[in-house]
Image (cartoon, rainbow, N blue to C red; front, side):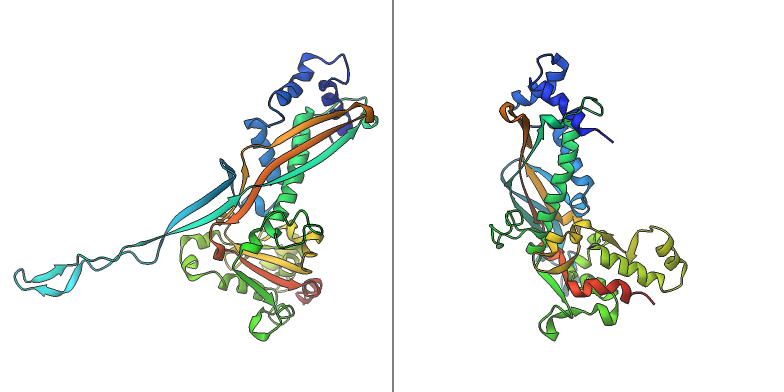
Length: 362
């Protein structure tokens, strides 16, 4: 394991704390100082990769480095039928054959658009001089810190990208208030039998019909024009741990080779032909506490967009009097859906979530 205290002493030396710093020691600091803390292309790409390592949905979603703070990411697809009869039904008396049809209906091109407006997100950390270690080991501090903070950025950004809601109170939820996430933008939210207030709104019953009823509801809610396209092969269902475990228990109870593999192995899950993926962000307590429900998503990662505007910056601030060094991070980002109806959200009560694993056992 990398000794972070020791590695940090390198950058403190580079920042000029120790008079004996070498030219090589100061290279990273001088480059950062000259670039006003902005990560270069290689550093930027590495930071974004680190953001995706500890995430599931964010890693699957389509990323774009934004050239403008407000940007529209669009995709074009043909909508409906395009071929038509090239002849009219009546026969031309002179040529004794059917007339050519001059009035063809134009094929419609549908443009999905994800409108991204980058919002500023910041982070700060510090290292005390007393925490520095004598033994220097591990990679250069720049790479180590980028790796650690990139992973942490990714976990937080994934949470906002899924659960962000600008209608939340800023004082209570300053992070999730930043921008509307994918779940908020989705046009379809399916409620369980215990959550829905009326029978009409009850989309599935996991007690009577098992956890598969939830999966079926997410699949059936996909719009016909999307379901009939080749996109359907890329449909994914993202679930919290309890839902994944309940499905494994259900398969295990069927006493088949597949059921055995669910108990003894780590076989990736599928329902019918679509992937069922455990997403840790859906397990996060602060995310579930937003509305006291459990969330599952069914959608197409290619149509789930997120972007970072221009640059990511990391700046050092030496506080000699306090014997510490502050590290400031800043970036602007947003998330959006190319087609709002392409993502379906399923909601369960936390009480349902607590019992579905045992209910799936036989």
